[in-house]
Amino acid sequence: DGSTGTTGGGASSGQSVPSRPVLSRISPSAGAPGTWVTLAGTHLTPTTAVLFGAVKAATVRQVSSTEVQALAPPHAPGTVQVVLRTAGGTTAGKRFVYLP
Image (cartoon, rainbow, N blue to C red; front, top):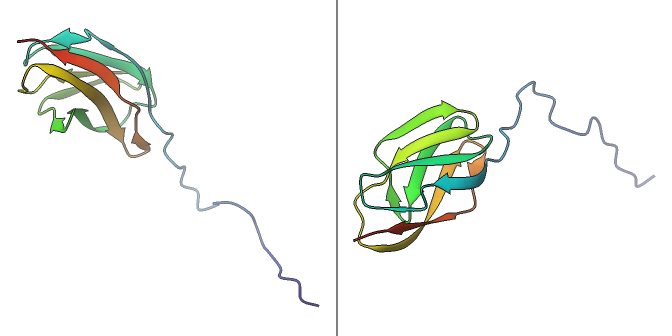
């Protein structure tokens, strides 16, 4: 009859797909290397990395599923995008200005 049968229609392995993280704000938005930066949003656990531009923060504290703190790594003065990675993906960037 030319038709193809389908069974089911979704992942039913019992494992949930991690939600994509959303970064809503960072504070402060400027500072020197070594500044503690608080990242706030949703679905931020478990955080696998926080990147300041291309530089990964060596020190990250998971406060909750909506808050993470990262120590700004060494970087030349200028503006970078801060992104957070989890198993669910990578957030859009928020601007951080490295001060001289």
